[in-house]
Length: 184
Image 1: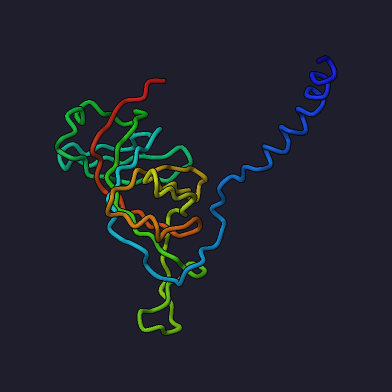
Image 2: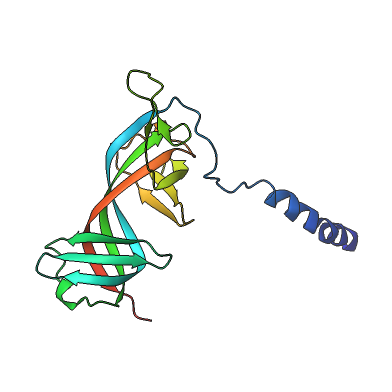
């Protein structure tokens, strides 16, 4: 019995090392394999942005400008359903639910060939790459250029089976649907 226990104890590090080598982390630098083009556009999603700092508030026009820790700022319209908008002040650190629309492309070096196949390609400024696709759970994981990742629950109309790691994503967001304060 002691020999089996000793053998198992001696082999445990090798078994652990072998099993950890079986898991490969997702890689957004993978190149898409399909033909360049739009996979799907107009995909409605809600993204939680946190922590973000309030840079400016225009209560009359219901506009708010938010800044991410890594620098980028964006101005959003605040939906009428956000009841606590009057409590938000410049300098607050908040979590904001933002309504966005995604378009997923396969690009070739950041370019999309013309519809007629011409060599004069259209450049598309994408915000993120598809990191993982899980059609069974309807999950789409994106990685932004700053390294931040977000996983989105995709609706039944989203053609996840046509998407793959490395696909380029353009996100347009313009409306805040909820704000909550993040106390330090």
